Length: 260
Image 1 (cartoon, rainbow, N blue to C red):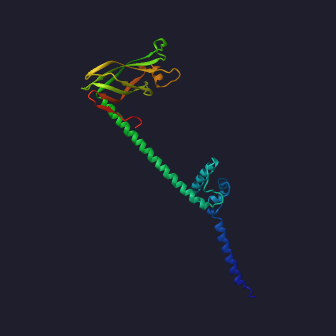
Image 2 (cartoon, rainbow, N blue to C red):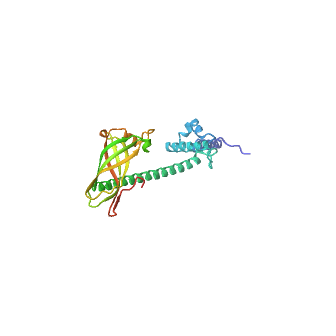
Image 3 (tube, rainbow, N blue to C red):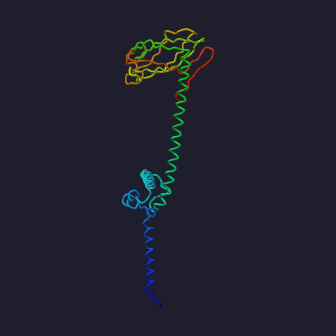
């Protein structure tokens, strides 16, 4: 049997030392850590090891583990449990999850931007059509009053009554006019608004001086009708936003509705 020389022994020891260092280095990699039954708690307890991960990876990992824990708490089925898998394996899923979330967020932002653009376009269209109608019609609010309820007369609720004058400046009669009436206080803040339909024929180049509208007042609520009814007309300003008009010759001008 050949006895190793001291020189040979030194080489063997050096080789074993290198292997041990490599093994220790490999075992100390945070991506090789195996997750137990409480991954988030484990990350907190082994913070020094997990701090070796890039900051972005740590953030993605915490977010992913949090979502998984929340889903588990609500009884969702988990097709890819964390327990028993390495940090590196879970990171692959966490990065894919983040990419999906970013795609969804981008799609949602795009959808919101498109909705906002559509709303702005519709508002511009409604404004333009209202101005076009107002070039043919002038609506003036003459008075506001509250008609008390009178059961004997068949009026079971008090009513808000508004009186209007409508001037038809066009060369053709108006058969129907729909408008929104906006009420604001002295500071310009909105008090409320009402929808009004005028279905009396207004001859060309003439004024209808006795148009009226009635709205039932609910004594148990404080909606727009009640707010307008309870405030003095002198303490408010009224503006009109026409929605549509039908002329006697069949022409109809109509703004896009709020739900379009």
